[in-house]
Every structure is written in C-alpha cells, then in structure tokens.
Image (cartoon, rainbow, N blue to C red; front, side, top):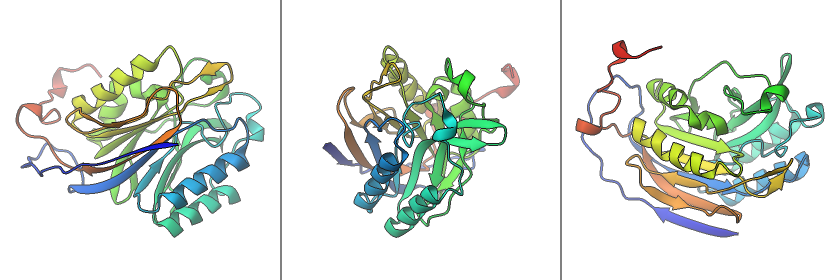
Length: 281
C-alpha cells in the first residue's frame, strides 16, 4: 500500500463575520483510506477499520468509503445491516477511544421501517454520534434504501464536519446547507464507479470553491455488484488546490495536516456575498 503524506503550513488570514457558525481555526490531521472492502464480509471489513485506526493513532480523523463495512450491496440487507448498539460498532468505539482518533465509515444501517445507506461517526473519545443517512440515493439504491431526511453537520474532533455520501456530492445545495449550518470541513465518502470518475473530480473541486472550505474525498477501488469503482481519492484545500491524491486503480492512504475553520474575506467571501432573497427555494 502506497502512502502519501504532505504537511501543509497555512498562514492564518484576517476574518470577517459572514453569519457562519464555523469554529475557530485549527489544524486537523486527516487520513483518507482508498481500498476495496470484501463483499458482505462484515468481520473482515470491521477488522480492517480497527487496524487502520490503531495504525493511524496520530491522526485526528480516519475516513473510509461509502458502505465499506458491508461492501456495495443492495440485496439481502438483513444479513449485513447493523444498528448503532451492535457490539461490533461498540468495538470500533473502543478502538477510537484507545487511539484518540475519530472515524467516518460507510455502513448499512438497520433503521425504523427499513435500511439506510449511512455513515458511522465515532468521535476520538469513543462517543458514537447519530448515524448520517444518505439523503440523495443514486439509481437502483432507491429500491433498496430509505432516504435520510436530515442535512446537519456532525461534531467530531471539536469541529463541525459536513458529510456528503457519494451522490450527495453532486448537489451543491447539500454542501451549501452543511456549510451554512456551521461545517468547517466537508468529507465526501463514495462508492463512485466508472464512467462517473470525472463527475466527482469536478464536483469535489466545485463544492470547495463554492463554499471556501476544505474537502476530503474517500472513494473505493475494485469491482463488486457489477460495478468497477474509480478511486481518485483526494484532499482539497479551501482555495481549490489538491494537496494529496491517489490514482483510480490502486489501494492507498493519504494523510494531510489541514487547517480548518478559516473564514474567507473580500471577493472570495462566498457566503457573505450571497443574496438569498433572489434565489428560488
């Protein structure tokens, strides 16, 4: 597994009040994992996540792709769905607490009335946050999963983080809503497949420049359920510069020290220059 590590030294800029509730500037060490989970093998995939948390005990946050705990599956979900009180998730909580590292990882959640394509969010003290349920489902996912009804940042590492689950990355409204509600960092986890690689490369940079907050994008590789996944995980700073990236084929890890919580000023103060009275709802 090839690892790319780049530390960023960012000079703090003067800030203005844009009405945002962003946190104060801070540096977070982010790790993005790009690999293929083993299809329907919860034990193996959870073990992989546990191992990564332990190995990255100097990272503040480790991010895995969409539906990593189960693989990209849309059938027989009762066999692979988890609830937040499942002992296997409790075990991941213990790992996070021991390492002092927060976790975002995709899983199939057993919810009221059905199943959700969701993100597991565990803080670095082991606190299990409410699951983050995908609100915009892609293609046949609508036949397998219920849609989430909440767009709200999650608090991890004393930072409000906006989580975008794959197809949600392609909707500017989702990222903008998260930032307006205080997200200082966007994290996009994905199981994006060919021929849509270009779509997410453009969308990830666009969401950064529209909101002037950094974004970590974790996509998977490999093949499963008739799809070939296209990787290209990356971390993008708030000015749109790609500070670390992986290719579309190989497994890998990127770790970056990234400053979050900075506010923009002048011509790039995108939030402060909005005119919502002119926009359609």
